[in-house]
Structures are given as C-alpha cells and as structure tokens.
Length: 283
Ligand code: G4P
Image (tube, rainbow, N blue to C red; front, side, top):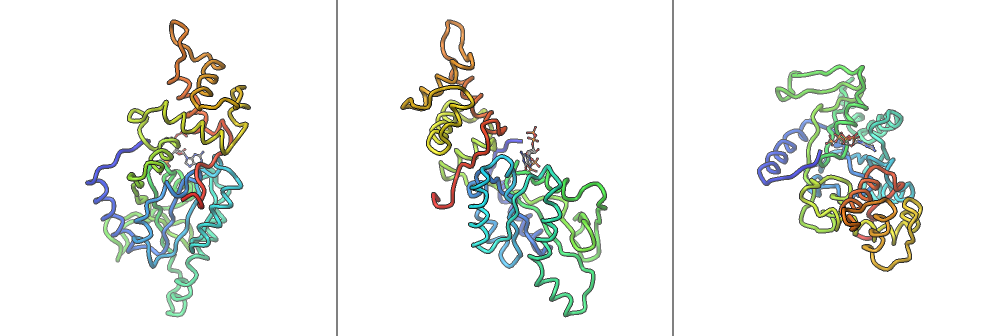
C-alpha cells in the first residue's frame, strides 16, 4: 500500500489522533527499523506528550542487527521504551505485553492507591502508512481476543480490543504522515517502498541505493550479482548488474530501468541482506 498525502488528509488525521490520544495511557509507535527517523512524524512527540511511549522498531527482520541495537539505545536514551519487532510473528508479543505494563506502572500504581482495581491499561498504535500497524494489531490481538465496543464513558463507536485483563488496544491505528520536506527522507521512504513507484524515478533511486551499499555494505552487490564493485560510478555498477542479469532491450541496448527495478526490489524484499539506511549520528 503506497500513499500520497494531501493537506486535507493530514488535518483530519491529526484531529482524529488528538481525540483518540485523550482516551489512552500509552502510545505504541511503529517505525521502520531500516529508517527509524525518516519513518517518524515529529508531531507525535507533541501529540503524545504526557503519555507513556513505546517505540516498536518494526521490520527489524529486514534491518541490520547491529544497527537495530544502536537505534534501540538511541530511543531509550530519549525516554522511550523500545522493542525490536517482526510484526508478522508472535514471538515478541509476550515481551511487548510486559513492556506495556512496565511503561504504565505509574498509572497502575496510581489506580491502586485510589482503590481502582482491574482497570486495564489503554493503548493505541500509530505510525506512517505501510509501517506494519495492521499486521501488528492482528498478530498482537490474535484470534482469541474479543472486541469491546461502546462502553460507558468511551466515545461512541470506538472499538477496543481486549488483549487480556491488563491491556486494551484501540482497534483502529492512528495514521501519521512522514516528513516530506527533506529530500533524504523522501529518498529513504521511496527506497523502502512507501511512495508510489509511478511518481519516482526508479533509475535514480537505484543509483542512490547502489552508492549507499558500496559505501556502507561493501561486498553486498558483488556477492548477489557477481559484479566488481571497483568501478568508480554507480551507473557503471548498474550496467554491470544489467549485463549479468540479461537486462537488455532489442538491439542489445542495456535496459537500465529493468536492472534498477531489480536492485530496488531485491533490497525491499531483503534479498540483499539486512540493511539499515540511516544512523542516528548522521541526522
Ligand atoms: P499499515 O497498517 O501500517 O499500513 O501496514 P500493514 O500492516 O498493512 O503492513 C504493510 C506491509 O508490511 C505488509 O505487506 C506486511 O506484511 C508487511 N510487514 C508488516 N510488518 C512486517 C515485518 O515486521 N517484517 C516484514 N518483513 N514485513 C512486515 P504487504 O505489502 O501487504 O504484502 P507483502 O509485501 O508481504 O506481500
């Protein structure tokens, strides 16, 4: 699911989120572990102030394991709880459950002091499109969870997914828009597949990727496509890849766009290995 945002969408989404955030104790923010900053919307820090905050480094199966650690420390230092995640799998869900309770321990303690018992912690999931919000909700909630709608005191129409006696999740995620104004952010979002390919120049995108890989993940392209990485310009590497993979048009001309799409697709699907596209100190 690719996206395009218009000011009308943004205003509506923001207003909705302002309302929803009033109902919850904890914001569960999904970011893409390959671009943890570029896949955030800085407004969430303002919207979610005074709430407990959990960042899920999602799609961490596709990102660099060492850099996942770097990013986890980065966010923890800023006061977030952090869990690395592959939202398609259930194996981190117990950990997340425990972290949610830890993040909300002050609220739970406050309730206890006031004699309020068995009031579950309420959370909502937020993030930019395609980051894995629905996948996470489905995996986390599983099949066994009942939906609890329209309780007294809850805005009409809100559906809560009761995970267990301790935690409830708002069933619709909050959608945030990414930062468009920064060109590098746009490039990274495009590389992970968050921007419509039709409006992108795939050739340019692949050249940026090739030069990033050459510099930061030397040997990756050589290993996958059996090409020499010693050539100076990224376009020469693309040409070599095209030749190796038989990307030629009629008249034996190199089909750059076909090779470009191949490289970008191999990156997105993880066939080039686990790669992270940005690091905290670069920001
Ligand atoms: P959204 O609600 O935030 O818009 O995202 P959604 O859950 O629809 O997920 C977007 C895509 O990302 C889905 O793939 C989903 O399978 C994939 N995805 C979600 N979490 C993870 C993860 O942790 N790791 C990996 N590798 N993928 C994840 P899709 O485009 O709908 O289908 P497909 O690309 O799998 O065919």
